[in-house]
Length: 189
Image 1: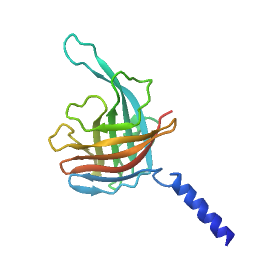
Image 2: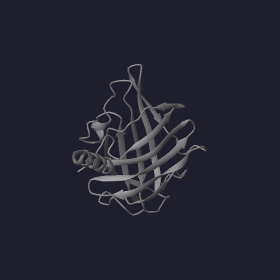
Image 3: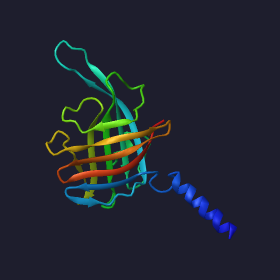
Image 4: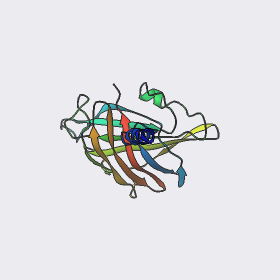
């Protein structure tokens, strides 16, 4: 009986800490009006700098740009380019998103906890891109969310940022496309 209790407690601990399949990510994905089976098996992220020039004679403004990618298969997470390798079968899919941080931030700054909204202007503290990649007829099929469209809505909330991972939730919809759920993206070292 003691062994059963110890095994049960260990299983609960592993699940609660996000060490099971998906690492704390649970996404519901629709592309082209169809549900895309998506149990997260791997993730990765990258940072860059977004530069906005308000107008002639005005100085450019910068912001940290954070991108995350999730696969329902084991992606090569060496870098963001390797995560974008061609899919190999119809049961594989990827979801990616990018957000822009606060004005005045840059490459050395971490993404900050907060709410990043779908914003038609697409500037600071906003969702920049959401993309779903599926595989059909021997080819990758990219479904890009037009976040400037009248029916685009939603947000990405970053709730935790550590040296190893960025966690939060996503709820973004545009037309017959949506990505909703919680995520944890591994941080590139």
